[in-house]
Length: 231
Image (cartoon, rainbow, N blue to C red; front, side, top):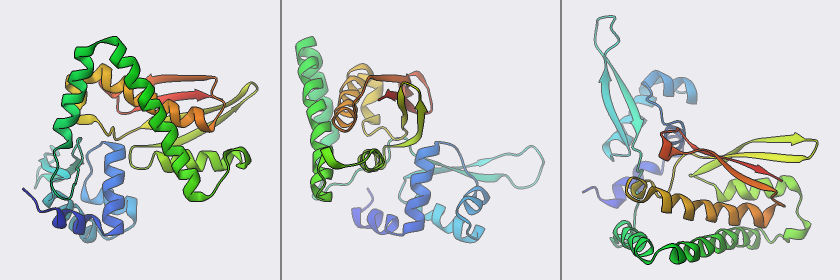
């Protein structure tokens, strides 16, 4: 098992961490040259960053034959489950699995209560960000609200598009790095319900949401979980 200090020291480099974030978001395989071009760095530097990320098992690498002869090129891809660190060691993944199984055993009432709690947690996270910024929700602009929801979505998603329509604005929101990916295979429906309630709490606290609709889901083999929020 890798020592946590090796992981944190590897990800402490700003460029390397940005590369890792990018690979998590895009979910594609990349060559050294792809990364060099994207981050405008020398291929040798890109190779070093990718090698370091590979050493701590947050990305994988494999050779890909081009069909053109010669030496096959190496491709790199982010590990779907990402990485979690706790000091000292704590097994929160197993605890999460137990809680989800308890909710399932207790039935629909427990599911409903779980969604209410997750909704409140979403609201609480936005309130915490507002408090740190010393902002009053009633006095902030639309652009500031977008900045806050983007901060709340750090590492799991982003707000890529805001569309103006005659009837109001629409936000297209995507989750590219599900924080509960390890539990999706076994408890997909419940996990998605709880996470969506959390997201609704965030958006509905900041915006006058008219409709909150999921468009795509990773459970259905989509690249991202995407949502349309009409406000």
